[in-house]
Image (cartoon, rainbow, N blue to C red; front, side):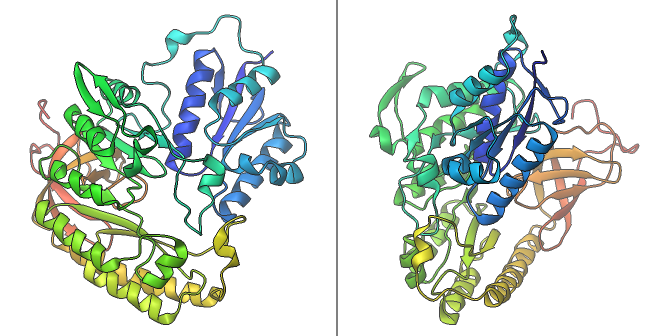
Length: 447
């Protein structure tokens, strides 16, 4: 009997971490991972179910795997809606919700028994990672306590459950030892870390620390690698970590999903509703840490959004001068409270507002990047291509932000840190030249 497992991971970085944990356990038990449905004894699909497009992608993937293989185990966010999966694919072997690692492994055991002699020594100490070797995601908690009207994450992933501080710091240390240069700290609500434990005091390497957001950032900052914070809800105590950024302990980068600027819309979304206070805090953050990069995401076309609401959002963008911004057109999510709100925005108006939003932000981004021309930046190399080299600065998270484009050169590999001179920019990316390149175009041996 084959011991080969096919695995498909869909959705956000948080789901990717779930996939890594399942794969690590399967490899430890001797299963072999394969990239084709046809070669697998069973296929595991980690789904996303947040918006309609993600549900469709997940269902299409399940159908594809069923047609090609026929033995499919489904997990992830869409698994919380088992009836939707059963209606589309009644013959899937097993369905489980998000972060159900042990249940997924048991299902694999049931339908594809593990080898008699597992090779656990072949699994690296840091586990199996689906990211490049030089960066990794560190998921610090599961679930969320908020009740945002557009979101169904709590119904799929449950309430906040923080991982223990020693567990996270041990994992982070193993990742550094394995060559990881950048940790991307993620969760549904990163800055709420430890709330569910009542900020439990724990012992770590002979000292007492609390299970809270600041303490975690402070400890991760001792690793001496890039630490990037994502999904940070703007609680007041977020202000406390900005000095750590100014001191170079963690990256001067904050990903805060603000969603809108209109007080009326924020109230309808059940989000913090004081954009003036947000602007004041942004100003304070920049005074403490002038190099801080601010990323956020916004929703346009939320039910009840008027032209005045939207204009308030554009005005906020102009005042806030955010560095990196994502925008989504509101899409009804089955089970979300926002579906019951009055005055849905027509699709054509959503589309028009989306483009106006992106044009406004593109001009802001282009100007902020233009001001970096002539500066020296430290970059992390992501990929070496024949035509150019792709890197990222401290201001750029992988997959979602811009790039630093460098000319081809010998001796450069993914994961290298380089100091470069910024020579040009566009709306999203920077272009740079090397500071320490030999005449031949090759780097010296001490690079």
